[in-house]
Image 1: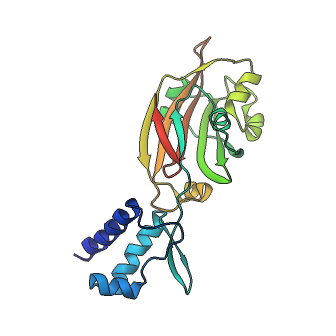
Image 2: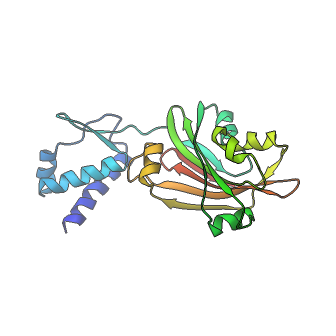
Image 3: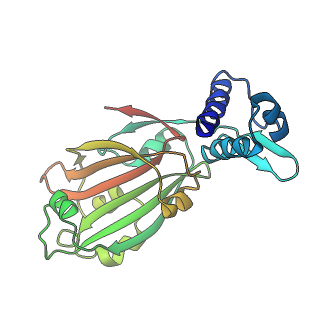
Length: 236
């Protein structure tokens, strides 16, 4: 029953937020005020507020109270593997910074190897780039690349911030994608730390690939993690 009341409190606040009753930095009722309103123990109020904070709708100042957290502008994003994320953001006028987070050889994973059409003896590397738009980390791109196709990837991978630029340096000019699979999950601790998002902010995962249009070679298999609170998604 108490869990139902906690959910009811969260739902009530979500309805009020949707209706526009809270503006950025407006103060939420105190725990004592909420106890009087809902006639429940303070621990229930505290748990409901903790959930709202984990969902990214609230922040607290010790000794002062809890406040409505301003929502950032959401970016329209076309989910396609045919064009680089960097180009999409720059075309929209956003300040973009890309950081290379890792370049690591992975253990054999049949699903990834099958996506790349790589042999079991091939070496496959994953390259992670964090996308920071207007000083906010909002996406993590993880590309899986076979060393049999890019022989220097183990050395060059740690410096790559745009896979499309890298491919163009290798003589590939036109790109295509043959799959786009969307799913929703919650971030791991490592992903949450990199994306600087709250525990209950869902992550939209785009599973896709990049193929050279001329030769039909599979250049990479990709997982892209987007913060769901930062984008409005357009699927084409």
